[in-house]
Length: 426
Ligand code: PHB
Image (tube, rainbow, N blue to C red; front, side, top):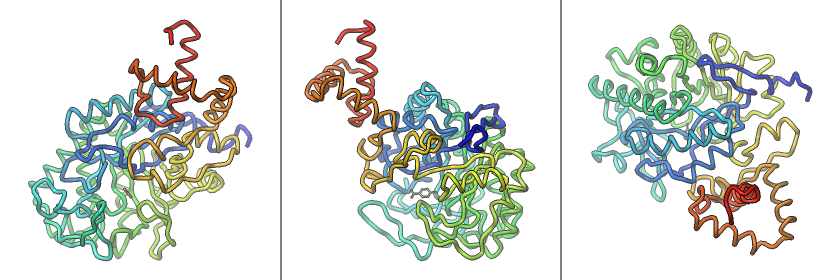
């Protein structure tokens, strides 16, 4: 592709952040945190390896223990989590990348078995999710009738969002994205199927979008609206998300977010159900039409090919395009798209199970070439290489002990080069 490839034009976000191209890494649940929401060391190389994305949107990060549902999901509600996230964002920035934190509260998708008080989860209305099950390895449960949020509880959750947003900035993130998609708490307020409240948060479309607007506004006051984005899935009925008039609903929501001068709007394309591809549903809302209502940055994500992504950028009011699954198995996805290198397929193993395998062990094209050269230089003497790595680990250098083999070798190679420069001795 020529230098006027729409995917490889620079772009500036409202915050002033300069993006070198248009390919965003979409948020991906990868379940590598501890069960009490602490980011772990293996997450550092994972995000750092993907720093060539125009922008990384983090996996969903819960704003409170009450907002959580699944194993291995990180949080941003205590100082220890801020400290661990800071190490990750520092590494991304050192590698030349940019990263925003996706703030998440799952609402009625949680379960009493993981709620801090052991009672059913909180949601706009006492309406359970029907047609799906709550799954937390290794058990499945029926979704419960959630507890209806009181005004006091709503205010508390807004405060949780604000604290998490402030924590995100303290942790070095370049901004935040509110997870308003996929039938989680914000989506539960927006859609009539999960919200039959009769107070100022329910009933009319204006009322149902109030919770989102209050979260956006409160966070904007604290960290600046130029650093706040929202993700919506206007066409998804996954997890029982339902509204009889989606088009009118989302036109209103996007119009309001535009008036509030939100920094970016992130739209999930039709044909995506949570993390999976499905048949496109009836009752779809045109993302192109919604994008046309929004003056600032629009990101569109979901089942895109490079070809489709270019079309969206050229003809359908999008500024940036997101790839999720492509980034799992191709840490250097932008480079591969640019050069037309083949894309690696993601393996099911390692998707959510934890550990380094299937997480930080997908090589870049450069890794593969270096790996070959490295082996060649050592004449394939893997024992020699492993001995070096063992020595490096003993010295407690970097994160070698916690990283996958390819990452070890890449680090090892870097360190070996430093040793050759006389910066330290093996
Ligand atoms: C998932 O963990 O599968 C997941 C999380 C957040 C989403 C969708 C899917 O928005």
